[in-house]
Amino acid sequence: MAASKAIQVAHHPSRGSSTILIVMGAVLGSLGALMMAVGVIGAALFFCGLGASVLAFGVWVRRIGWGAQIGNMAMAAVSEGRLADAESLLETAEASRPGPYIARFVDLQRAVVRLRRGRLEQAVERATAALERPIGILQRWSARTHAAEARAIRALASAALDHPDAARADIAVLRADPYALPGSIARAGLAEAVVLERSGDRAALRAHLASKRFVLLEHAAPRERAVVRAYQRMLRVPITTPYREAVPASERHPDNDEPDLGDWVATMAPGAARFVRAGAAPPAPQPRAKEVIAPAARIAAEKRFGGGGSGAARVFGLWAVLIVMFISAWTLFSPARESHRDAPAVAPQLWSGWSWLVPMLFLVGVAAAYVVLRKRIERRVLEAQGLLARGDMSGARSAYQGLQRSPFALVAAQGALGVAGLASRSSDFAASLAASELGIAKARRTRAARVAASDFQLPALHSVHAEALASVGRGEEAEAEMAIVAETFPVYPHLASSRYAVSLVDAARRGDVAEAARVASTATDGLALSVRGELLGALAMAARYPQRASAAEIGRLREELRLDAESRRWVQAVGPAVLSAFEAAHGQDDGDGDGEDRARPDAQAGGETPPDEGEREARAELEAEAALGGARRVRPGAR
Image (cartoon, rainbow, N blue to C red):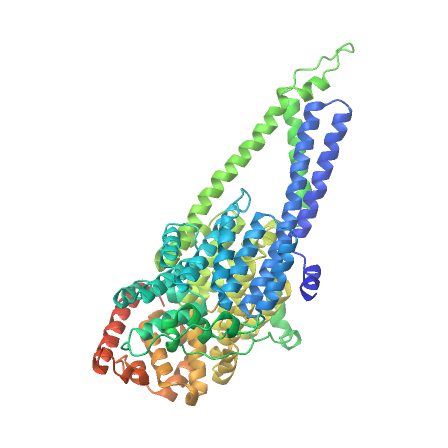
């Protein structure tokens, strides 16, 4: 089938490294067998054990790479709304009887698909299966991160199923879990909002949305962000209309399709469904044809995709050094040989005694030092992620800058990626370019680093770099870089989102409002869009098609521009023509903040609270959010 063909032609970059490890393991094992044949028992046992370990590790690397390739393809399919393709890929991975790490990842992605389809009971089952998988020694960090994601999915699905105790239990664990990424924390925050709304405690829901506003809007997925905004709109009007009934899964959509946003929100949060504004969207845009890109721009981009040392020579050289070191250790700790001819043969005794304890202890010491160092680095990365999730941009920037100075290539690349992303958010595109270029150079320093960074760090760094290029008016170079990203990392999970962001920013920076609106019209709600990119696209659509934009939508956009100073600065820097066109089409914001409430007919329908009281409530809510938003988003020195 199509999935199988894709798997056959797209080998993971780690395949070459795994082959070298397997060959080296076989060579070492053969050397051990040879020593066993001549009676050198101690050395034979050592080399046989070492060879078996290296060979097993090579096989594990190959299986992990194959599973990661399928998982990345499935994630990309989910982001583009191709849920049937994602299911097919995950079935292929599951049929191969993967180990716990890949099996957990498959369970996690299946839970995501079930959640996207509104099949909440099945989402809970798959997330629970992911959490019950054992966490091994290898890939422990990623495994615990995946477990936190699965717990966040289970919390949200439990909240939507009206199981508040189960949801709160998972939320409490996530709050204390240092491995929970900002996206998982945002999903847990939405789960808590659903629990509060279903309990009827509007005051608690209002306080929760205000206190968690940053993480909910900045790090939530677009569909989940739509629920948060629907709740915000719901709280600004009186309670006048009963909840929208959830649509049964059997009647909502065919198996191969994803429910539209309205039906999905009706399943997840019925109370917010009537406040959602969304329609069906066409597929994500495709990149421009390679021949359209200017040759000079492509050459400039290709220079950033080279570099790094050779793989096989380095690996074989390392093993040669290790073997020489072992032999040297044996020679150093061996008894002195007699020089006369009648001296007894001592080789078997030398190789079978306690002398081989030295290299064994050396290897154990190296492994222990690696574990300690990895734990230290892990704590620093988790600290940076936690600061980012809490909205402490200054602290997160300092933490990522510290990681950027690490002597380890992957750690430095991760730090550079964080610095580049934060710089782009604050409209410091020169700093974003510098940091992403540094990260790319670090991640490409050796073949091993390139392979390890190929799943996420490298394509993410190139994508951030391309968006920064587009932001400063170097659109041709940005498009060339994204074209090469698509060729070099075809299964990067966020490839479609990155293409969209670069195309949108490029059009906005050139002042082409019509093209920006065309790109914005192709966005699916499965793309991992930032708040700023989503806002820019909505402004372009409202400016290009003013007759299609409701008064309520215009009020929402004005409100976001007013409350989110960071996003407004970013839009002004990237797309001043789009912002000007929006203001020309819809007038300047009068600053009262209640346009959205006046525009909704149900806001005037009566109920427990008079209309004027509802408007006063809306103003109070906006003022509270503005105070919180200003405190969280405006930073000293931000451009």
